[in-house]
Image 1: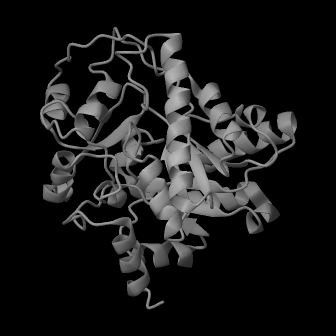
Image 2: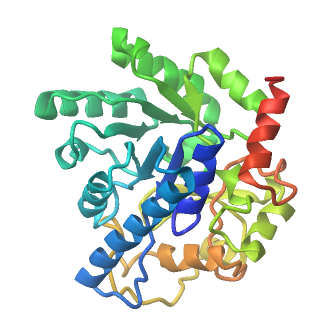
Length: 331
């Protein structure tokens, strides 16, 4: 949902329908026009703009969160900017957010994203010992979720070995009695009310939804890009290596096919936006590829997705989608 897809308009619409709106902070600035320190400053300004757009839509009502990837070079500045703007929570994954509490105040809720009990144990131990804090909620990502994945390729090929119910059991063991007061949020292939009910029955306190919101009118993606999701089916989904250093689940596109065949895209790197990216070795620039996807460029875009794209058959509004979820639940 990053690189201008999940921004203020979408977050505000979700809040107005009773959800937690989340702004993706990555890729808001223009790398080509703002080099080096200019990119950092522009990223901060653009994030402020999106936060204020969301607040204007909701009348400053919450809860509003910002997702900040640990792998970002400007991670700290984005977190501090979001906190200064008074967001309600910071969500952080794509790496372990071990230093996150150092950048926030006591009023800002912290929500780490983890994919195993082992990762959660390290976060809990570090936050307790260094900052005397524990998470206010925890997002548990399963091997079938969309975007970047905190799993090995072997685990992704055999998701039953690291299924989300097993991760939930691991998390509860790590938390002990604290699991009763720290909400655990499921992130994996949520597309309809039946999915939500299944995770609630497992013992999760809520769910995170990403892919279904891409094809809403409030999404930052251009209609040309949305149409590729509408046309896609389960067989069009695959996993490739990302410049972030993690596997990433995407739609098969010409860019993906070129990468799988061993080709390397021509690109420049005016600003090293990812700590883990080595421009001399990676096959493509993920920032450029995601911007191309947003604009509907099928040849050069990287279209991140969850496993279950079949339910996406049309462009809808956030209000209509959430009403659909509520109607299915007969509430």
